[in-house]
Image 1 (spheres, helix red, strand yellow):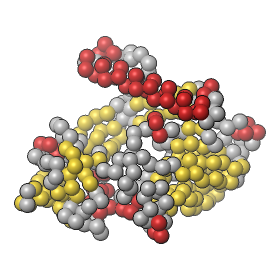
Image 2 (tube, one colour):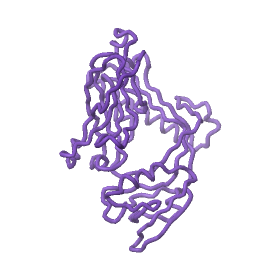
Image 3 (cartoon, rainbow, N blue to C red):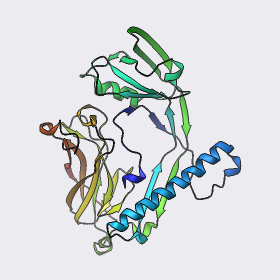
Image 4 (cartoon, rainbow, N blue to C red):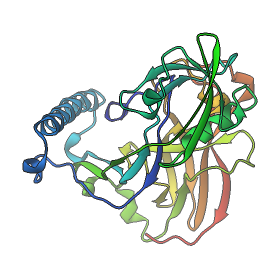
Length: 309
């Protein structure tokens, strides 16, 4: 299902998010089209065309794999949010002299501060950018909210500059894109299991758990699922999960490939049990980036939890 999502890029684009309550549903015909600017309406029409082209490609590949698209179901959702418009893309691999700026978005905070491609960020909110603090600095950027104060020390053409500004924000509406019929999204064996079930949990892994990072599921038993969900109820028995790692920084984020590789995990689900899924970092294969052998999906914790379908 990687055709339905943006490619995971090596560079790190910084956008901090917070949830609000506004709604927009993307449908074939926009009921609010008459309220949009001509430019926005044109962009949304182009988006619909891109969705159609993508689905034609998905249909082609599923057909080649011998799958029937008649029961195809896939859904993408995102809550409304206010995004901290920092507008920086950074190279976080080479940190000999801070993070290197590789792109600055127009009309962003970075643009207003005259930050340019090739500049190096030496510190953020008083935290020096170095190998030891790499993950901490990335977290600072990720947790920025509109109206937060951001201060940086910048190296520009050999000279240090101290910058400070209030973070700008921009509002993005909620969106939901549903493809196919939801009645075809459940495995047939679900009804055979009655109302018994177990739970797969993919919530954030505590920092106290060593070498385990967060992950997300894109497919269960050959069927696409909503990757933003944090829990999945499954009937007892064997299930096959397709998983992506979701590292926020550190060793797992250093990938050379432009596309993330999904990995398979087979799990035996038992009734009234909760399974915590994560991505385990393999230190012995930390340099094997091409095939992403440096991580594997694992169940890092199991606990009891009542479950009913």
